[in-house]
Image (cartoon, rainbow, N blue to C red; front, side, top):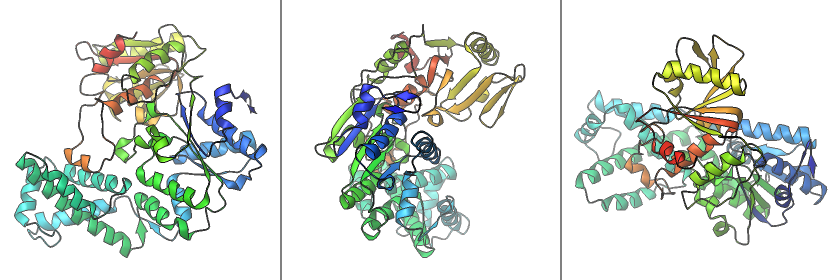
Length: 485
């Protein structure tokens, strides 16, 4: 099958023409996921006589859904429905709700806290004394830390499809703690959260508003009351490894109503969004959710060299829970992974940029674990303009800086990964213990999500990747990757 200037390989063709009702395609980095999705759509329309409006495609971000829709138009000359989960939710709800301001919950928490701290009155929190709450707030390093934790807890609570009665279950869980001090603190936190949750929920209901989590939850509840989805016979989902329980429940409800087939594509090696409620178990155990499903793999990578994917594969498969893939490539690059030890960071970063430019080309993607990592490396010869790093001495060098999370799905000729030092990458900042209650997927292997994030960083390059670290501060990932080089 030919799509534009590309011909599908045997693995891509097998996936694109799958006749199974439920298919999961486990696709390696740079293995042609988008091409296979285009091939799937082309096959359904030309060979199975499916109409354009009978196919639903779902991607995870506005950018990726727009990109996919544009590719379908350009390469296939077809107009297929391509939505994010949230836009699909709004369509099912037929825009009956206003979308809440993202800061609404923050305003509600501020109001509740200020009424206690300033007025010394507890008119909003049931079952707590003013002394209880003020004492708790005093113990927090910052009010903002507590506020962020409450917001994160509620978002994970909703995206994991917990209900109000779940708080009783949470209380039973924390009762099993052996440390009475931890128990008291967690019980107090749960009481504060349930009060915030109730006030926030009432505000949304009173104002006919929904937040992003509600879009998915309410859409699932309304699937049987809408004709919007009745036309769909085939559903295709990209980046399925990043699916949450509520998103999965929505898709399952649509399938139960329409009897549509399901074709999902993703890479468990690149699942890096647990903090938003994504549940990798849905991918790893797909057969448990859809009986008689077909599991296929794309193992030919067209981005990375064979040398790089061999090393990256050894690294990622250290976690035995990942789906085994034997990635291979026809490309060869001598020493595609280089570890760079820096002492005078700002000077040596400039030397590295010049070296990469002079020997390998002018397109350089610089990646960091955090938004501000780049500033540690820039001297006065550089400045940052949005995501672009401008080198005053040579403005022909195309340098882009992104966090690794934001780089997912992208590629560049050459990549530099910063800050591979202890306590930074992998990040050793653990989630607050209380979040274990609302994270359905548990971590079973040390730093497993950080490991996948490092894998994403390694596989952005078409040519070479430079891992920047400091002598005697090397991260455990650097020490491990050295053994494979």
